[in-house]
Length: 384
Image 1 (cartoon, rainbow, N blue to C red):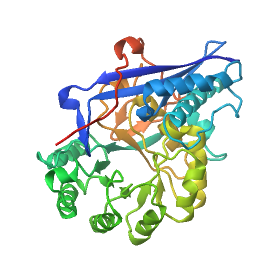
Image 2: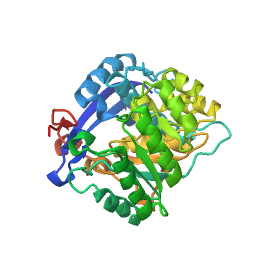
Image 3: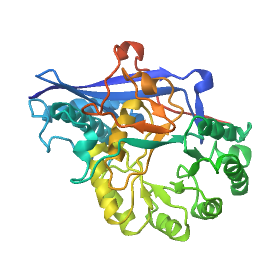
Image 4: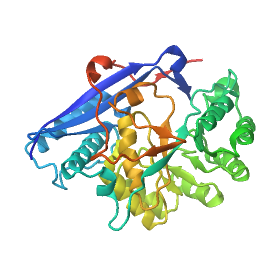
């Protein structure tokens, strides 16, 4: 079997006004996707989604550049996947999309789920993975920030057992202080803390002193982790926070190579690593997970955007040496699952790993006509 073509579908679905979400200084008015399709001379094809932060047209250009080294090759060749270079999107996300599509194709050829191909010898992959509802991106500090409580209660009622929130719109717009955030976090703890694990994402917006105060409060409230509280390049700051706090300090979603994680692991800067198969690919994701586990550090992948990327990260989590949970974007809108012909069902906050070969899903028909790409950034900066 030989690869005959590698192509990219660029997709968009605009959010209705009520679906648009806000975080920090941005409003997000659309959902994007970049889907890589690998065709073969025997009619089998593989599909994979690249993280759309790389901007779909730029991802497509990188896929077109990389495919020259794939055409005419055997998809089972273990050296075929392009390796991320650590420069982030769109180069790395294009490589990640190709890698996911190759794993899907290999699974179809071998008639096995991808998780069975990724897992360590002698280990059995999970049959289902617990999801955490990833949201808290739509509450506005100037307009009823307590809406995040209603959001959390809704996820609990839907059967989710974990919820991650962010720190809201730009603090200076509403004079928000650390203490005001802590009041809101205590309210979230009070209303859903007995039903759900809780995580906080700082989106790298805090300084170390702010993060230390918030982290100690999270310790007292029993939260599950504190994600990317300070700028990601501050390795020593992360190491100090991780040493000072009981709540695990996590991060690394934008890093795409083992080498980028090495200093964080060596300095014990992360208690959990969050490499994303849509950014780094499944091959490198497993390298990162195995290396982190040598330091006793588990992985819980970042997973934003759409359903095909969720399925790839699902297989990644199911095959990890110490599997935890998988992030599920609660604000992506219909494109998230409508891109798939038969979307998998979520039962009580769990997503089953399909028994079908490859990633276990197929693309829906006429995606290009139903979701034509709309040029422009994923987020537009607001001025107040």
